Every structure is written in C-alpha cells, then in structure tokens.
Image (cartoon, rainbow, N blue to C red; front, side, top):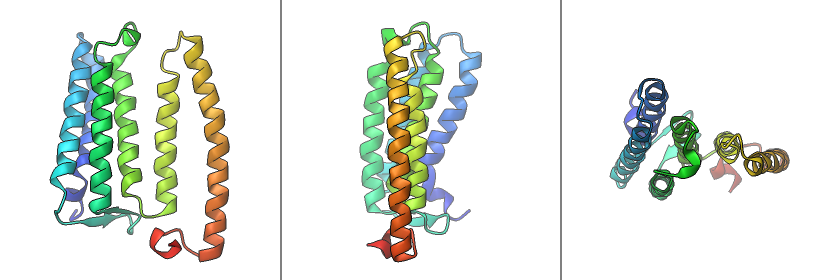
Length: 187
C-alpha cells in the first residue's frame, strides 16, 4: 500500500477505462465519451508531471520503477495520447462505430506504454510491449466494415507475432549470458 501513491497516473487510466466501459452502456450521447477520455488522459499526464522530482519507488520486486526517466516518458506518452484523443474527437470514421470502445482501447494502449516506460526488467518490458501490441492490433482493425482496416490489422498481427518471437529468443540469449533479466545486471 505504500507504493500506490507512486502509480497515480496508471490508476487514473485504469479508472478511466472502467468508467468509459460503464458509460458506453449508459450514455446516449456518445460524443461525451471522447471528451471524458480527453479529461482522463490530461489528468494522468498531469499526475505524471507532478511526480517529477518527487519521491520515487518500485513495484513488483523492482520490475517497475518510478524514476526521472519513467516520469519524463510518461509525460511525453501522455501528451501523445492526448493528441490522439483530441484528433479523434468528431472523427467521421468513428460515426456508426462504438466510440467508447475506441477510447477504452486507446487508454489501454496508453496504460501499456506507461508500464513500458517504467519497466526495469526485460520480462516486464516484454509484457508491457505485448499489451501495447494487442491493443494496437485492435486499433488497426477497429473499422470492422473496412477492408483496408482488416488487412492492416492482419498484417500487423503477423509482423508483431514474428518480431515478438525474435525478441523472446534474444531475451533468452541475454538471460543465458547474464543469468538475469534486470536492466542493471545486463548493462
């Protein structure tokens, strides 16, 4: 429980994801979901910015660490996610789709990127990268009626599967050489 204050940006994103999922079922005016997603991303980015220079900590046996590097990249990634949500507001491609689901997947991708920025272990970096990849596959194929969207998602899935396998093989070689997956031991 002592480490929870260090992960406020991630907790804000998780709360936003759950809230958007619930509101998708209840709210009739779907354009409000995009504005809510924008507020959630802005709050998570602001929370990450407020962590700069603050007390740092670690989680999951030091597999994730909050340090100045992680804070910087959380801010950069939060600004990128803010831009992505902002540009998608009022998008004609999302008309007739479920925009709440789109924003849930986009916030989930941001959560994975935040985890990847804070990873200090190859296993956690791989899990975060796979989380980002899975949500990116869904985003690439989000327009179900579009042939181009389906083709892009399939190509991305094949490319991601091959590169993921190569990455795991490389990680196994590093583990065999060093006996650890921690960045500090490998480096």
